[in-house]
Length: 403
Image (cartoon, rainbow, N blue to C red):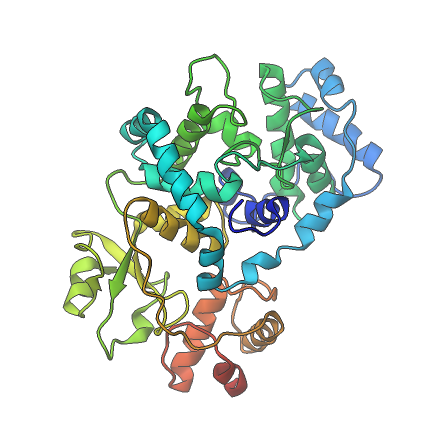
């Protein structure tokens, strides 16, 4: 990985805030297929029954589950995702290294025909695919060392999110029957994602593409397979061909900051009438957009177009998605952002204190976890409006002291 956290640690931290892609599409929390918890051997037996009941071969199930075991390291990784507490400027600077920019350009040239085909067929430009390829696995170099079946079964047995992971086990068994998954040897991220762009088994079944024509979907060893599959998945998630996703802008003094936030959209012509301009190039005419201020009115400013929201179906972390989207603009030729001079933010402990105060005032912050996600930002903005503060959704010590 990049400017380096230790590579594996960074990969596992980036792998997900919640599971990626297909799992993130579901509204609400999926119900588990079988009861979670209890003796792990009994849980394996329950899962065997579930997969056979859903049409899979009993003999294949016996072979598939023959050597599965619980992995405590998976649970440890699931409980520690502190990287998402970083602020946008710190996070983006750390993950967008000169080395990644250089390798991005090299890979764009090396696989130019693949990128061209991906955009023609699925409408997804090279910059987006390169950004996720880089951030997920450092262009395939660091794909994770967790046994995928063990990871999926461990998280399926754990009672925190079994409904998200148990269907992935069934999908992995179907891949196994197709010859595209080895329960003993397939490895990836701690949350069960596989390959260069880190896809869960259900997403591979739904959107896997044999990009190199060898008759198999090999996301671990074949860049054409991985890139074409990632593009098809984004199209399936709602990517709109030919449209931008994120664009840096300059803002007029005295703008009404309460108009910012991903929960609010205005036409580009409205933003222009308010004095918002593209820092480099014209704005996306005819589109709706949200004004995104990752670190408040004194930091970088972006217009987020409809395609930006699609990226949250790949990964649900605000700081990760914003950094990936910005990285994709850099790989597509945009200059380094104007960082500005944001007001100091909150420590993790202060953020948790803030979230508790917001919850006490009746706001839904999506959980007290010390992470500045979109729900916490929306609650911050509402309190800033109530207190007569600049409503830019950026929590500061001054705001914390006022609550």
